[in-house]
Length: 523
Image 1 (tube, rainbow, N blue to C red):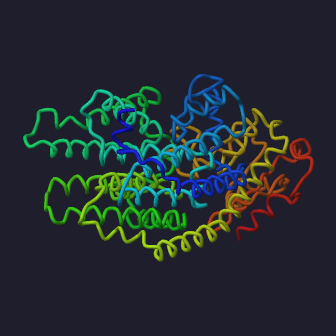
Image 2 (cartoon, rainbow, N blue to C red; image 1 turned 180 degrees about the vertical axis):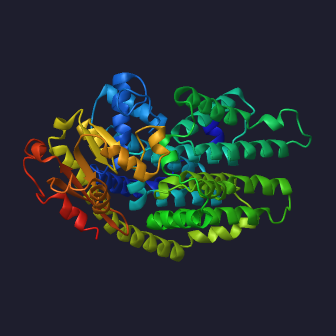
Image 3 (tube, rainbow, N blue to C red; image 1 turned 90 degrees about the horizontal axis):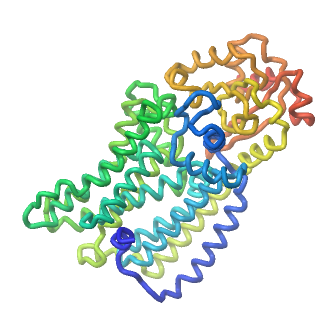
């Protein structure tokens, strides 16, 4: 409670003019969340299957036998397991994702109501961006993204404002660091930057350097270290198999920078808006410091804003695959929160910002915002429609008849969860460290050694599968055809089963053509 009070600042009361916008926002959220209620990312069902098996066996596993670090977020899987144990549902991870998203929105609203001047404008702008359809797409798709965003928000506020004079504040920072690392290993970077910023600020706040100033960021750092130690004790490593499988090990700075740019552009107004808000907040902060020429103050301002740069350096050195804005979102939220938390309530050096409330400019901004939401919703509708159809279509099949059987997939989540089968993942996410560190060709060859009963493939995947196996799969009937859409491309997926199982698994074929015809679509 004390930490929250330190973060939030003075309370603003009696603002009735916020009731109407709040009501419209609530109605918009309810309608959009209801429309996207069946929208789950494939990887979200990997989390859900891990949660099921954690409840059944008591350890992290993909098959119920061997321990596996095939999840990007142990904390999210643990929370899903707790909820799933209370009330098993196909929507467990979706419920958690939406709950953390709403907590993120309400937290920002509280900060905006308590803030004043430029700081309030920053929180309101972040709320507006978090309400866009693309934000809803990424933050409510059943993944840990909304949880990671909320933790990054708290880390950013800690870097920009929180002091650690009390034992309660230190304990809260320790818990925050612990939770951050268990949510995503990449959050270790944000912990390091936040701890450094806290330490520098503590040193600058005293006229004479106190012996404990260098340790002010220690509770946060110790929380992160404790979580890293726990991961090592559980898995003999701190890097999940997903991080290994998605990295080539070859440095690619230009490609990584392009991938980050594409991921931000692919989030449309959400990605562009977050980038603009970060740059605006950082620029305002530097402008406010221009007159002082205080090196310590500059260091306090700059350190949190290194997050995206350092993240890019790590990604480029590892040659890591960037899958949408999810991978850079925590760093952006962290930097925006730190900049906003450091903005003064009133300062002559930023007085020009008060012009943003001018009626004409406000109306123009609102019109642009509505236009962005309208454009994004057309993309959002197509993406949600395709994913929802895939979820409901597979849910309607008799895939439980494949429990205990073997299958091959490049996107394993849907099949892993609905079949409860032994899915061989050609992408290397769930089949152990050896598979994760092997080239894709080797993984495919290993998968083909199994006696499989189903495959889940794109046309390109089907071509590779048939090219490696000859005539083994060419005449397998396609049970289902599912279209996964993104902003700029479409990826059809086909579920094919062994001919002798087709009538049992999918008695009403939606696409009875053999798999070889799906492969032809890639040519």
